[in-house]
Length: 344
Ligand code: SD4
Image (cartoon, rainbow, N blue to C red):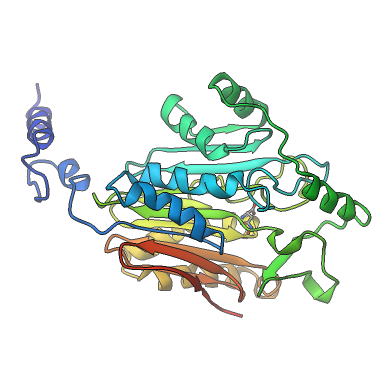
């Protein structure tokens, strides 16, 4: 046996006996990376509906539970809420009237799972978690994701509520296809055109990131995507690095808004890397938003994108292109909804 391997086994054994808990081990960096330390749990998530989702996540975090379990439980709240027309059940359909869902999840050890364009399953986040835990893969899409979900006991359900169907039928009268942005709770079409049906939830994903009492991070992101999208269109939300990224040494970030712009800059990964360079969460989110503007300043004025992030110290922040983006925070010290700063 090589001496490195022997050292690893030795330090793992000591680690599992708890002899290194809370201390910086010199024996092997893996021991220090995941060693429990005393941390204040915290969870943050996108938009106003993040508040109810955080409260659910707190039922896990507040008891010293794992961040991964907390974020999964948290985002299942908007997924099951028929009044939320941008996530899960009740989500606005694509242009063909099909509700297609995107979700991803990531834990403290770079494990991740994702489903894209999944139909008929109310909790895509739990399917994404199973992809992570039960398969050697990271992503399953469409029929393959559905097949996998059904094989694992998920029920097929109609996710198109009468309300969302009504909005879709209204949209069909004009069938105009363009992103609609959320500014101060109003829907605005680019270039001053009239508002589009769909209510204020036309495209509001839930992205949730959390640090638990062991100092470990996880994140989850789930959405029905852009309303009336082309069938098969996938945004940033289920793409690891774009809609969500977790690096347990640094922190975590997630995004909402026009997914195409977030994918182009690999937004959430960028935010985490900016924090690695020393930026505070809010400053890192702002820089990522500025990257979108630098690519195309005129277009950026017509879009909404928001990021939120937490670092290893439990500091958090958010930033958006436009006014109107809110995020919810819950910790042992506070519970609030924060209007994010924005460029425009
Ligand atoms: C997407 N990012 O599918 C998602 C939608 C969203 O606020 O977040 N809207 O592009």
